[in-house]
Length: 240
Length: 240
DNA sequence: ACAAAAGTGTTGTACGTACACCCATGA
DNA sequence: TCATGGGTGTACGTACAACACTTTTGT
Image (tube, rainbow over all chains, first blue to last red; front, side, top):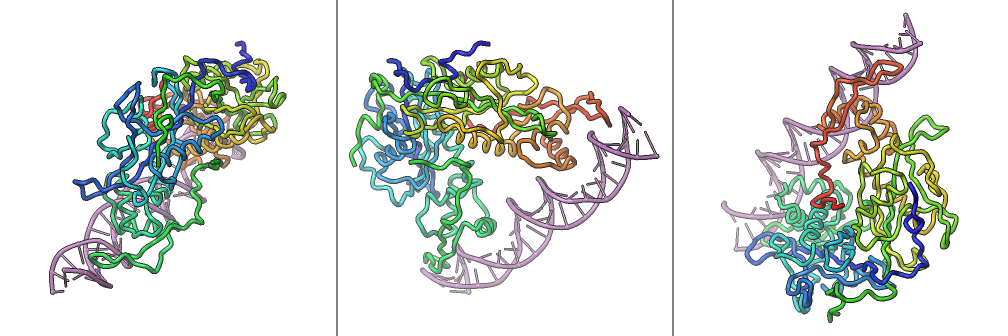
């Protein structure tokens, strides 16, 4: 077998061809919100209405073309801020989508997923942006339905073995609030007694001496132990 | 906060700017090989010597620029074939690397990792390609040392919860051979008795009626149950 | 017969699950 | 005092690690 030099050794000094594939960065942004008719919280995400072809009028993931002087992480953070007005409490690369036919013109999308705290979200006052219940999405532009499905799968997966759930809560929270996050994401009820022991033994929680006083017995407030690293992203350190 | 239309709604019909970021696809290709001085198998990977700047003379991951009519998966498969002469027995996207300073000119690398069976590898007869022990790599071009570290982390991680190890073995194999794959990747010895029960109870293995006859008691040959899907890539189906 | 690897049995520990039960507060 | 959620105790099943033991071959 012969090796084409141009293949095995990309030459960064060569000029980009005129029909160069373009790089877009999009982000699936998750938060929890109590749907109007439901008593339980659901996963919500913001979408942007397209105002031009292709797929004019359809909803799409927030994103944009990669700026020449901007890292991938920075591009994801930037579009997230422009869509939600927030900094993410969690941000991770999801996948690079590059099927030839995923857009009328060739485009590779590097997709991130993020968590934001619902209590920080400003009102729905950003033009062409609307928050949708992840369980009842309309048909989206491009391959964005697939992308959201994959992001939801990763979210549910990751919530099982890492402590990202605190990305959806304020600094202090009760165990019931934390449990509700897990229940909303996993879509099933968890035993309060067992849940308590699991998170208490994980070493991630620090009990405070404050209590949430509600309609019944006050519940102790906890906060996350920032000393504990996530330690599930391997040797990759985020470079913003 | 105001939304820039160009950011929230990438326009695929717009012409690519002259300084467009270019997309490269590289692949970390793993196999197992018995190092000359060692009695145990080690993880090896092929590297390509760079014959031009930047980093002329250094070794780099095999890869190339993304072809305009080629999906990401296909590009990874293609460069893998050009480097090893093989089709991968396992291929998965690793990560998209896009730090601004990772190359003298802006380049986003979408990196895959793959497994190939060592018994299928033709001789080291491909020009400028050499196989290295992953534990003793030299300094590589660009950020490729980091990339290989991350790929190794993913390999070790994945071997713990999926059945990719068979990607390094021929159709029929003994449990000792399968165990050696795990031991080489994980870097520690496993209890033969417990290992046997684990894989037997997993439902992934089908015993054959053939035996590997060696210096001692013959060992039964097994093959993988192709009916069992990997089921750990979520809703994402490979599109080649 | 013996070495060595194949293969089986047994035991202890850790952990998740199920569920009974007590505690503290607001109404 | 009662209802409700906060919080504790306990028993059971599964999974895995450790390791003693038996079986089957080549030499």
